[in-house]
Image 1 (cartoon, rainbow, N blue to C red):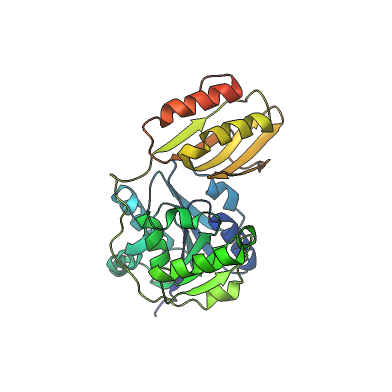
Image 2 (tube, rainbow, N blue to C red):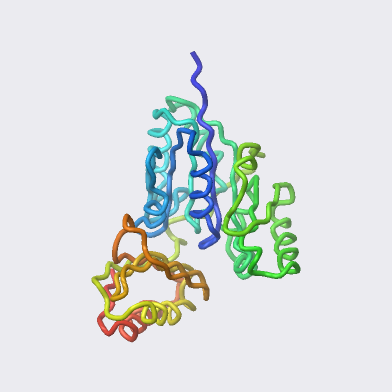
Length: 309
């Protein structure tokens, strides 16, 4: 008796594009489906997994690299095989913001003979941050391949840019992928029907992710800090020019804050209780002076030495 294949969807998008919000909305709409979730993050500590955790979801996290890099590919393959032996209807994969997913079809093809149940790869959804994509698209190969291999491109945060900028972004992504459907939205709000009707067009290639070109990732495990939101904001604004991403929680005099920053954009909000407390992950742009600048910014904001790991 042939077993029903597991529908598989890959969700990509550069740092801060809105992947986690997209998945939270999608999981709510798929509450009646038996769903598996694989979350991949570049940092050594998972942040997105804690935000997505909910009852009834079988979830796995693969951290400290890209699932398409040799550093994590073996673990990725083992996790895919393990999920195929569970009673799920579909599997959602959230790739790291720096992941290059071009090799996804090849990974599944090589793995297929060894799976207890087959996967039906429905395709890739790429979320595009309209506020930052034009700054990075022409110079970052992983981002280019996220767009090029997508079957649905979601232009997110369209409310934060002009219509002329949205048109320019759409033309730019079309140079890398002239065929994929494009959907404009805000707050990562995408109808589940678009995912259900997704068709994989088989775009594939070699991933550019290697252990030698991965960005610098810093994890801060911090005790309760002096000061509140203003001190956190001062630190983040000081270090933002040297970072691609800041995400995590800080325990302050005003409570535990969830910190989410991309470039000059910064969101501070009360942190959910189930998130790791006092854990902040930063992805640097590669400056030789990053460690020094990080330590200086931390000490000026919080008046204690930086707990750099």
